[in-house]
Length: 368
Image 1 (cartoon, helix red, strand yellow):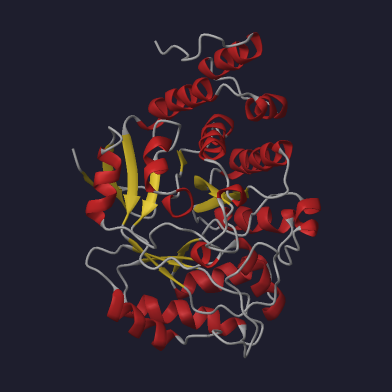
Image 2 (tube, one colour):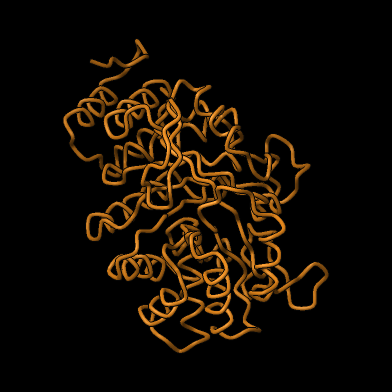
């Protein structure tokens, strides 16, 4: 039997510990209390207990490659430093053939997944986005296409006049197998208005994933934390994801994304603390009882903190990535990718068992 670490655990925390151990779902009030508590070790150990019950000591990663067809975007979200206007220095839009050439030059043996996101480029038709996937699928048929955020899908409905289901169906025909989790930010329309999130609103984000799940797709979902949102906003975000998971069962993993400053030279006070990052991962594990995996995203929180996160409820360290751009454009100080050997070292260094997976968490190889 596990015991809590802190000798000073108060009655409310003890009640939450008991609820979790009895399999009772945590409430909004429980989640906010955990965020406001300074008992990080008890929260972390409880999250570790839940994760070990769900996944044992296995920690998953994938050999994948991040691709960005265009950085031109109609939106002007306050936190984004990736987007460009048409004609602005550094803006680009790659054709399918150009992306194929880029991949052929940079791909490494063992890549199983293309992770594809980009700007909402209103200067090209929806067919461009379909053809982009088709070109990759024809050249690399054995590599899974995990492409586009729910916000991009909503954007595609506006430029095409098609319904969400019709857009997703056309993309599936082109080779789409799964959606990325981005575009969620914080699922609060008030937050989205203040942060100038000029893309899919809360209902639209959730409906895209709901529709994808009904079409048989398993998807990912995120939460971008660390700006103006309250602790209650974060917990409400998790609860909305949990409720949709109750309905569809289509989410494979939840990814807390630590907000990056817009300047790489930003000081420590402009970044989330390690304390806040670990607490958010642990609370995500405790609140999202119906999602199998919580991801520690080394791009945003760093390699060493990712190792610690594996004893705070995380069971996934993402993948090799190769040339991540969006978080680094916003000021991330981490490597833009890791090798398979480095990921295996990272996981083993935390006393866990590295498991190479495919997009859908099928185990490819266990590194005992």
